[in-house]
Amino acid sequence: MVISVNGTEISEASIAAEINQAKAAGHPDNDALRDGAVQELILRKLMLEEAAKLGIKADDEEETIGTLLAQQVNVEQADEAACREFYQQNPASFQQGEMAAASHILFAVNDDAGASLVKAKAQGVLEQVLANPSHFSTLAREHSTCPSGQEGGSLGQFGRGQMVPEFETAVFSTAPGEIAADLIETQFGYHIIQVTERKGGDLVSFDEVKERLQEFLTDMAGRKANHAYLATLLAAAKIEGYTFPAFE
Image (cartoon, rainbow, N blue to C red; front, side, top):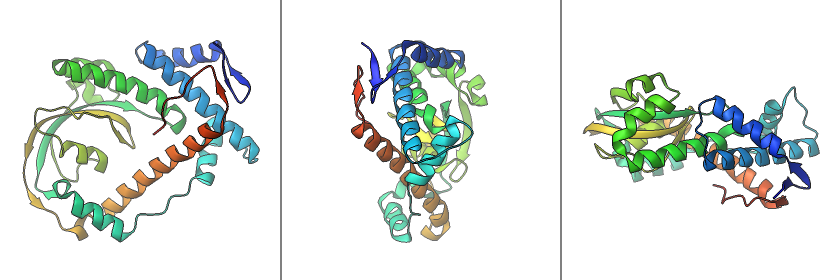
């Protein structure tokens, strides 16, 4: 069936080009890859249409999309009350001297427009890892865009404050020997995380972590706001020939 967005066809040729580009970057050829390609083309089409309506012009499509999101998605910096609430509700995330050893498989995201395609690939590999944990190292060598992939994804041992907040929270919330059940999104992309060791520590004071926590909560709010904005574009669009999954 022909896929169209607001009356404009998304051709099989454009889908094939998107898939080929992903395959050239090392993405496995499967149904998830095609879905990711279709979803990216739909979202890109909607954002470019909206940018045109608003008179946004830039040197290329990526810059146009970036300008649109910057103009239309407003994110306020997390205030102290929000930071304190998160701190109080997540004490396990603020242990001083706590150490962990972990491995990861990183799927890098270069821009917002390509995130869905990368996430689709990452989700497929996560399902493989959860089904066969012993294959983690092999899949890391095959798929990870982090140099650690050549070491089976091993990051060695590290303490609090050495990793970005989202990654750190996931690691110190996962039991040793376990694989995080969900993909972890950070500024670098999507991670599959396996924790191999953890050692406890003392609680860090709120004042010590307030600034970093504020950056983390503000970044998370920005990601949610971007998703919400794209959801409004999808809700207002007429999409035929493809059922877009629930957008989160």
